[in-house]
Image: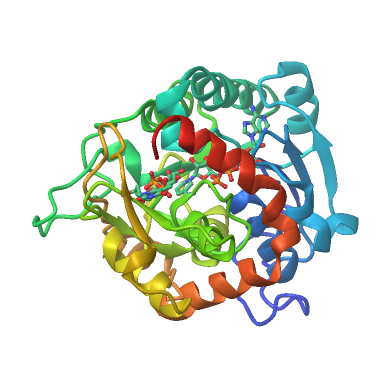
Length: 352
Ligand code: NAD
Ligand code: DAU
């Protein structure tokens, strides 16, 4: 029996069987993308039962789940704890694995937490998935492919050679390899997605866009690394997560899907948009030390996801999405203010 006309589906045709994927374990669900995933899933798939596991590191924030708090189960814990993970995986149908140390600058300062959470943590999840015969969707990044030249028309595809640059991206690359090996050697059911740079609400103030917005809101200058020529392929976090829902429902085990929304922009362009939208001039821009090994350009070819699974991004107007993000930070000082001083103190130590 296929559940094509359930009244709670908001008109979205679903191809999974009644009852399938009902119980989701979302790792890292108190972080930026994970919490937005929980919000989107509650809205679009209200019959999914969601358990979040998050160790609440500096980027994990229970306040990011406050609107859905009564509708989910929340476990504060570490994915590296095999016993805990084993028990949680056994009670769920599918693991959506967002948990990771996620910031390149931190990985250059202290790589160990990245090796621990991103590699050992993923290994623990894979072992539990294998033992209990459950499904996994592994969230990864386009940074596993390294970078592209600024003037090269080429984009990353699912066939691009892995060539990570930073401790962060190398641990994500390693975690992808573990997943593929567990599919091939042990026959687990798993899919992987590699997405480009996300923006939107509830992103930690260490990341580029929220850092600049909250700097202006705090009366501080914007901090641009190097010359600002580096290109990132921006995607709204809800587009990333709608693609994840599509892959969960329609993706094939063992397959890798790139997620991107044709949002290439260089950093200086994005900084100028933030300045304009927030009514500031160029005197608010400060050039700071460049990131060591700074990747030049990321760009995603999303053909496979569009052609094979029929996904389409909704938030393709970057200026509108950026304005909405500025509005969110302007209206949610309680969320970001407690994080700001500590984050800037960390940056100050490394001259950024
Ligand atoms: P984030 O740092 O905002 O959130 C990560 C969350 O994982 C935090 O809540 C943290 O407490 C939790 N966590 C970390 N280690 C853990 C552990 N050992 N046990 C339990 N919880 C743990 O990161 P994000 O930007 O939301 O990224 C989420 C995922 O998406 C990551 O896997 C990242 O590699 C991937 N990704 C991010 C982007 C992006 O632009 N931010 C793009 C593509 C892919
Ligand atoms: O491509 C996906 C990746 O995008 C994810 O895997 C990572 O988890 C996520 O953090 C992001 O990585 P980046 O390193 O690209 O993002 P970040 O926001 O740190 O930086 C974006 C660009 O902006 C990069 O070229 C560095 C630059 N930058 C960053 C900061 C924090 C600045 O110029 N100034 C800043 O203050």
